[in-house]
Length: 525
Image (cartoon, one colour):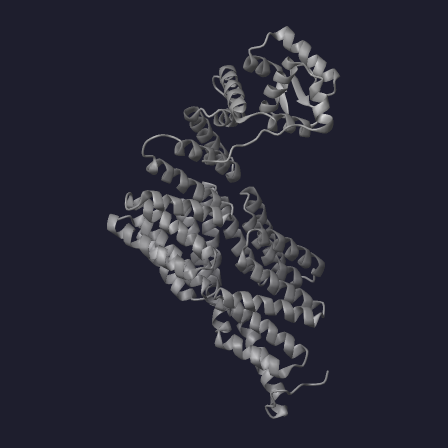
């Protein structure tokens, strides 16, 4: 049994002010506090069932007492102090609040037979707190759908959480309905980068479904696999993706199979296996056949572009073409998060040779991330612009963007992004001639790469360390780092680094040669 909730008793100045009020004024303030910081005269009167003139007189007294303020026109009032309103509200018992919210909701519903969207949300709130389950579910579902259409997934999830609470309180077997809501909540939380909440709801959906509804079960398994991939848990991602693939094949779901091939391609890409990633993506394209699903086709086009982007300069234009195709398709369906990713990756690619053009594309990616309320997209776009700013000599701006991205991604516990933050810190410190700070930052980046098995990123950071140690004439350290980068396959995994890698490797070899291979050999600057 849940612990009883005690109403809060106002103290001090607030208590003294309340003790001077009449019983009717207490009742007015109770209703008003439940409506909100501001309230309309007609709604308050209808909810209370109060006579107009008597209510106006009481409100006038409360205005003169400094408790309420009257807005221009005389039909709207507000509490002079929000904390005072909150204290009144918290002093009410749960049973009293249930009655107040129900009466407010009924009065509001009568006043708005065809309510606008902002009133739909308020009706959902009051019916929910008034514990009128059927109406609460209906209005909160409408509010959630409207928020999603308005690109506000956080609000959409908030309203849908109320629907889940209402469903859970109903008698009978509601597992299927609850699994449907859990799945929708998982998708919403995933879209804003809250992977912990998304995974919790997807797991709940799977538990409720059991072996029923193989199509839904497969889709939820695939969603959990995507979260595991984002969390750098490749083993769990691969296992869940293959479970989903089996179910999709059993029911003959071509679209589901294509989505699974795409996820397996993203896993391969994350490991630096770009040709394998491209093969999986092409399998996905084949599985789609003549599908007109622009959202999936657009997302897949980004992944194909990513593979071409890292398979060498000779297929660079192929990558650009796939990114542009993704932008057209995703723009048509308004998939802002994935459209942000398309502009992001296009910006990284064009920025290799045209840094300012790359920054322009990354700015579009950031704007779209903000539009979608996706801090992860915003943070990663800032991160990717750091090297471009360094190439343009914008050291101060590079540091600003990197630290801003770090704050965003730390709140999301985005380890992949935080690894890049550390690598960027190393690059910035290296540009500033702060060798020890650079080495420490690179070391932290390597540790993250090893913990989450990110060979491509680790190889790149070893290259940076080799360059740094060569600059500081630590030849033994430089040779060790360049060998580590070579073992990990830096030239294959980071083709854009291949020429610089080969040049640095040769420079280190020539510098070490006169020392007779002495592992402690150093050059005097």
